[in-house]
Image 1 (cartoon, rainbow, N blue to C red):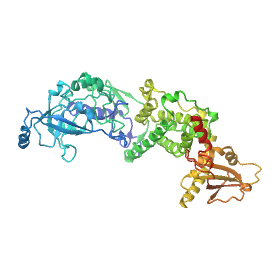
Image 2 (cartoon, rainbow, N blue to C red):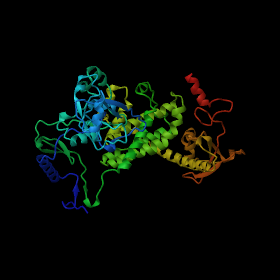
Image 3 (cartoon, rainbow, N blue to C red):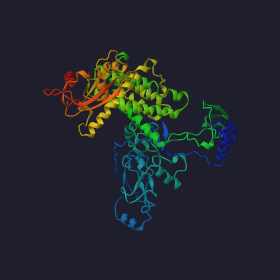
Image 4 (tube, one colour):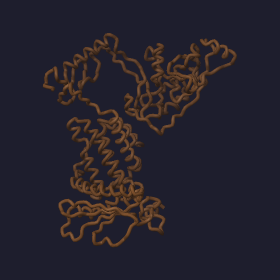
Length: 572
C-alpha cells in the first residue's frame, strides 16, 4: 500500500524523477541517438496536427479514384536483366505502366519500385511533356512490398506520402537530408506553389487551390511534416513537455496537476480501453451528425426564429436539464474518464435512444415553421453548442470537426479553432428538477407500453409501433387526483410522441364501452402516493396509414392525414 515513502509511491509529479529523465535524454542526444529528420505521418489539415493511427476515421462511403500512368523509360540507362534489355532494344521507346490509387501525389514521385527485373533502369517524370523538369531521370528501385500479384507491377513511390515508400528509400540511403524528399502539400492539405517546379506555372496556378490529400479518411494519409530546428542546438534551450512540467531555458515551470499518489502494485491504467473509447466517440459523433443534418445550414440558421422556454414541452425541458449536468462535475475534479462517460451516456441514452427517436416524426413531417418543429431545432442547436464545448478538452479533433461543419459557409468563424470560443455553461434557468421527475414518471409508462408492443410483435400482430393506439385507463371516482394522474392529463398530447404511436386516449373504466378489437394487450401500473392502479391498453390503430408521415391518422376517403394535408397545402 502507498504510504508516501519513495519506495512505495508513484507520484504524478516528482521533480527528482523528471531531472533524471532529462539527464538520460541529454546523454541520448550526446550519443547521437536522438536526431531530426523528415518522415511521413498521419496529419489533420484542419487541426494542423499529427495523428496516431487510432485517431483516424475511415469513410466507408468514399470512392478512391485510381489512375493508370505511364513513365517513359530512359533509353540511356542500363538494365540489369539481359533478356529484358534485349527486348527493349528492339522497341523505339518503352514506358512503365503504373496503377495508383493516389494520383494526387504523383508530383512528389521520386522513383518506381519493382520486384527485381528492371533494376538499374531509370525513367522520366510523367509530367515531362508539360515541363522541362521531366528531363531529369529518376531511379527504379527494388522494394519488398512490391509484388506481381496485384496492380500493374511497378509501383509509384512518393516517400513524403507513404510509410513503405519512405522506408524503402531510407534503407537505400536515398534520403540523407531534409532537401532529399519531395513534398508539394502544405499544412492546410493543399498543393503548395512548389508544385510549379514539376508541372509548370500554368498548371500550378490551378493545382494550388486544390485539396491534395486522400479523401478515403476523415484525416489524411501520411504526409511529410517538416521539423523546425532551433538555432541553438543546446539541450538547455529545447522546450518540451514532460510529466506535467514545461522545461524552458533550463527552468521547470509547473502546470496544474492532480495532487494524487498511486501505488505501482495497483497497476492503475489511466487510459480508457481503446475499443470502448472508439465506440464512445462514434456514438457522440453520430449524435452530432444527426443534429447537424436537422438544424439547417449557416445561411438558414440566420433566419431561424427560436422558441422561448415557456413554449417548450416536457421532452425539451428534460433534455436541457440533463445537458446542464454533463461534464461539469468531471472537469471540476479532473476526472476525465467521468467526462467521457457523461458525454457518452448523454449522447447515447438521452439523445439517440430517446429524444432523437421521439422527435423524428416532428422533424421530418411537421411544417418547417411550426412551433413544435422549431422547438425541437432550438433545443438541438443548444445541445450541439454545449456538447461541442464540453467535449473539446477530451475529444479535440471531433470538436474541431463539428465546429467547422457547423459554421460551414461562414469563413470568419469556421477558420477559427473551437478553442477560440469561450465555453459558456448552460444557463441555470434550464435546471428543472420538476421536468426530471415528470419525465421519470412518463418513462415508467413508456416502459409498460414497450413491453406490450413486444408481446404484440411476438404474436405477429404488430410490426411498427405506429400501427397501434394506446388507451390509458384511469380509476373511477377519484376525489383527489394523485400527481401522476394530473401529469397524464396535462401531457396527453406529448404521450403520443413519447410512445411513438398514432394516438393516445385517456379514459376511465366506466367509459370503455363494448368495442371489440382484432387484438389488444393490457397491463397495470401502480400510482405513486395512492392505493390506485391505472391500466394501459395497446390496440390496433383505428384510422388508415398516411403515405407521407406513415402514422395511422388518415381518414379512408382522404389521401393524406390532416397534418400532412396542411403542410402540403402551405408548400403549394
